[in-house]
Image (cartoon, rainbow, N blue to C red; front, side, top):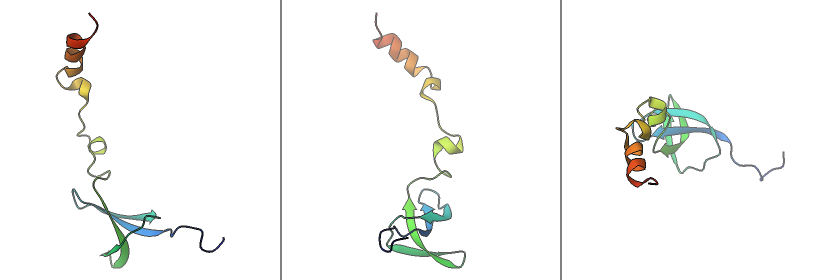
Length: 81
């Protein structure tokens, strides 16, 4: 490999700010902070949401079609007459 042209690929600690879930994976993301996790220092990257808090993955997502027929009411009200 050529020197100096590849990104810094390393283990990074990702923290979900909405629920505090932490996980380590390899990434090229640039970080300025570090944190100790399970006895080892890692670069820290803060996330707004992850698979632990996203409604789609947690099963709490609501479909627009199933929310009291809003789509059907809209179509009936503003659809072609």
